[in-house]
View (tube, one colour):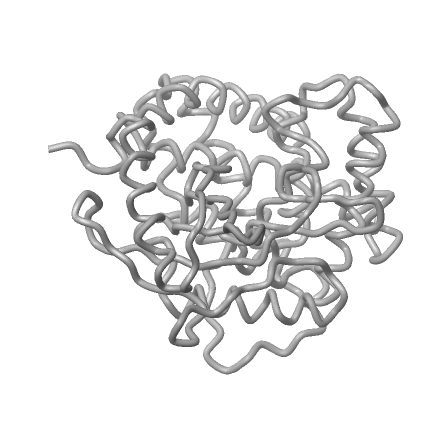
Length: 339
């Protein structure tokens, strides 16, 4: 019998829609559902007959404990108090920030939450690459840098609430024996030569991350998915969405994530400069730290291989693996050649 992840995307989405429809009763709302994102979580726009709009989020199975998800919402509240635009969670009928909901067609139950709708347009898209207009690229990545710095400022100042729980993008989580997103070096699609490059770079990354340390100035809660799709802009405001991967990690890991998939685009140098320029408007970023970006790009590259490794034989992994392997090996070579 196929697992849920091995089903075709169309079949998964048929079953997820069933779950989404059932979920609405937990918030006493009724409305049309439109799927707007299905990667890890499934996110639907809910539009009621009265014209109200919400975002309904169906979480992937087993990624976060209940305490971890509650902690995510505590950070969102603290970020909002700090002046950063983030989603607002709407409690269910029982006053809980999320509900556990199940349907026969999906194994187990899923955490489901409802968020107030955020108006705005995505400031860019990884899938489409960088727009050819240098001014647009500069504006986009300067914005990401500005928001990243302000979020890192908040995180380094914030005293964590008692019981706060979240995963870590630390040495063990990135390059340990059991990395958070999976044992990337075991990906079956790797050739012997590619695996050798990855394993060699893994050792370098591990040694350098241990040496880099975890000072409060460089390591805190981070978003961990700073791609343009996760920034929604209006004329006078930018809001950050999708905190699913947020956890403890190095600030440079956030910046590396923003740059990772555009490394081969023509506008990369413009984007990199703008990201750093925007960041420095709100937080110190010495040149010596910027020089460590290749280290964190390599660490980021491992996570994506681990991601497809844990999803082998799925439609998504089969499509993405060749590109992710090629980019990972390139990033590893860049790091090793810089030694």
